[in-house]
View 1 (tube, rainbow, N blue to C red):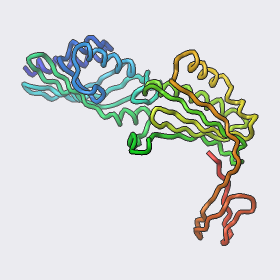
View 2 (cartoon, rainbow, N blue to C red; view 1 turned 60 degrees about the horizontal axis):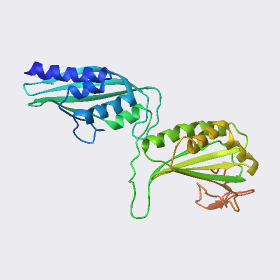
View 3 (tube, rainbow, N blue to C red; view 1 turned 45 degrees about the horizontal axis):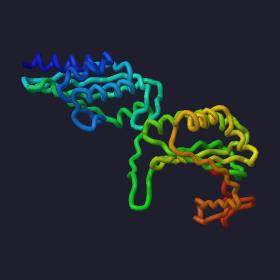
View 4 (cartoon, rainbow, N blue to C red; view 1 turned 60 degrees about the vertical axis):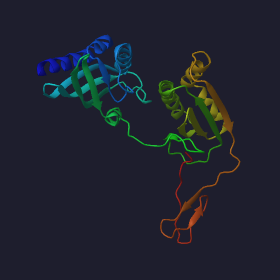
Length: 284
């Protein structure tokens, strides 16, 4: 019986390694993992396996240890796979992910029952992401994540642009992120670009960009941005988009002296009573 349980576990793992969703479903009467949302079987399991294998292609399992008795077998494994589609909102990195996990396989009257365990945080870290935990919303606020693209330039901006895009789901959000990377690369090559910050909150992705003067905003019309606009107008990407240009009427910056704790308004000849002079900093 132990050999039968072990053989069932090995056949199920081989089905994953072969990249065959139908075989995955055929070798498990029920299956669950951290991404499945509960136990799956039949067509639902095949669909789940197909989605997983689309994200992580060419899975290579190395069995590290096998422990079992007459009722159950546990395989501890190390997985290497190619990241080829967004996972949990994380864009495709195009590299290889490595993670450890285990399959607990029990034999019932209906066949093998598989419970797979792995650490999703470990997967994220293997893809180059660090975890940050925020609530989705409270009574008055929505929460999200942000990013900053500094340039080191400290002159005050002559113009700001604000855009936001509404996305349908995590997969579309990841698609937008990939396009944004190319847009940012093109902006960094322009002379008038001063910096950029992005904010993902709810179903909206915001971008605030600083330029030295209004004429420099033309830099956003480079090819990567044009491709993104075509995806919206002709390719069905996103449900709503806002673009806007803002001219600052007043910019004030303050800094606190590290020695005497005095607050100083940053500007020409700015200094606190002890003689400390604040250095320049970029707006974004």
